[in-house]
Length: 260
Image (cartoon, rainbow, N blue to C red; front, side, top):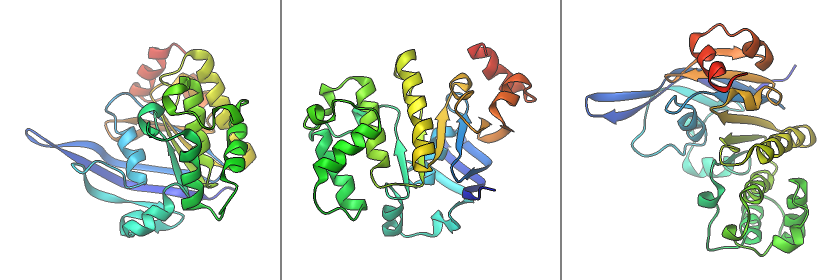
């Protein structure tokens, strides 16, 4: 039986508002197991993205952690120093953001940016180019040698997303947090990227927390789905079971919205 590597207990995150505070995450409980794809599904403003950022302690400065704990492999991340968190970020937990064009540095080539991850988080001290090309091939970039010296703006949206995924797996993390990784891609590219996540999970023994608003895209991908609404998990379980027999009214609305 797989063990839980990430545990979120009664997490509460508040933002300042004109009248008091806005409870963006309000008593959230969630676990991610080894080699599991968990889809965290909810609409805009439900608290899913801020939850993903807070796992890495990258929440915006105006966010207040009002309570709860996040355990990464038994360690409470709120008790760790910033230096300890730097070790976890990228090396143990990586994040794939929604828009790679704003996440990748426009001033450096994509090869240089992958090499920086290798220098910082791995034992590799040379041959960064060959390892980068290998990583590009792992994420389905056939023309790896050709694009390694390109800048992010020179690539298509699908290629940029694959580069982001290559960067995320460069240090062999145990968990990838993917925040709406396909929302800016067309339907064909969405399917390819989701299939890539599935392949990487199996090949690299990865756990993946997939954050999305679209329950339809995870029905064939996720091992488990958790529906988040108003900062709480309102339903979770097997994706096909939830889609065919939802019990929560908000889940029913999400399913009706995408027509599955």
